Image (cartoon, rainbow, N blue to C red; front, side, top):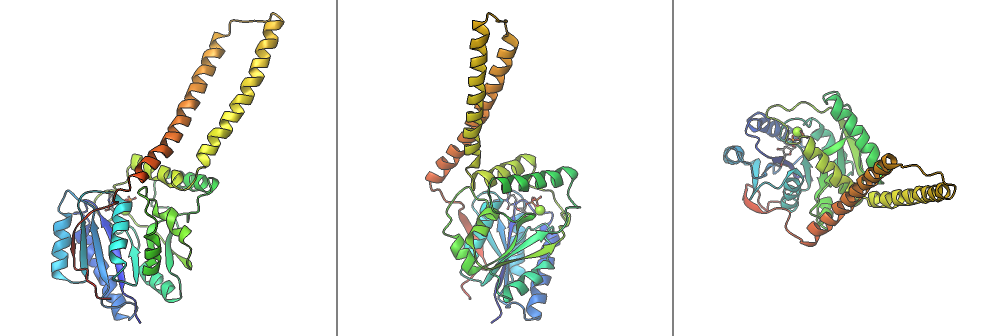
Amino acid sequence: MTPILYLVIPCYNEEAVLPVTSGLFLSKITALTASGAISDRSRIVFVNDGSADRTWDIISGLCEKDSHYAGIALSHNRGHQNALICGLMECADFCDITISLDCDGQDDINCIDKMVEEYAKGSEIVYGVRNDRSTDSWFKRNSAETYYGMLKFMGVDIIPDHADYRLLSSRVIHALSGYGEVNLFLRGIIPQLGFKSSKVYYSRAERMAGSTHYPLAKMIALGMDGITSFSIKPLRMITGLGGIIAVVSFIGIIYIIVGAATGNTTQGWASMTCLLCFLSGIQMISLGVIGEYIGKIYLETKHRPRYIVDRIINIEEDK
Ligand code: UDP
Ligand code: MG
């Protein structure tokens, strides 16, 4: 039986790029249907993440024109990861497979064919992995490399150079629904689910229009989520650092006592001040790291919904 494929595409203030890419998504679905790779009941599902511009008007216009388009509107902006999980959860019951991708044309849609082929061969998760970073700035390339190294060191199991372009079977999405955390970092959770997986490689293009919603501050926040949601190593490192400082301080105390006993006392205010500043800095950073985890506990204990759906168009129980 040919699988029903739902493309899940989060959109936030994308009025500039949607008119350009929506047609490309439809041609891809049409071609795959014609070749018999997917069912004609497949859909292109745009998840409007509380956009403030005309994004929803464009999505509903597309849905009226062609029933292959579908739309889910969140009641307000919840961020990319939440929009994505919303799309996956709302679609899982109506399709066999989903492929999540950006709406800006950066994820090469020709990879969709290869992903569907991998699914046909038995993979329930297919990761889209970038095979080069030539379209990235020097800073983004290097910071990404450092970040993946750091994640590995922290024991976080993620696929390097894979973002959120991936195929998931509905079985996998149902397994994913058991992960109720509000601090979502999907690329960290998915490898933990198990199931047979494979990778397809693609070269990431430039955005076709509009501009990125991931400035440096947001990228750092997502990066921090990646570490603190999956590893408690930073806390252990603080303990280790505390231990090292304690040993060094102990040696320092002995040195001071010996100095005092032998009458070799100098004023030493400069070294004292430096030490004080250094240690207060370390303490503040340590408190910050611990605070980060406490903040996460606080957010998780409230069990607030990750998203609220306002409207759904063209998704019906037709599986
Ligand atoms: N996005 C979203 N909610 C947000 C920010 C972004 O749904 O709060 C969507 C956005 O429309 C795009 C995808 O997430 O389809 C990735 O965002 P973007 O392309 O700006 O990030 P980049 O590819 O530059 O990292
Ligand atoms: Mg993008």
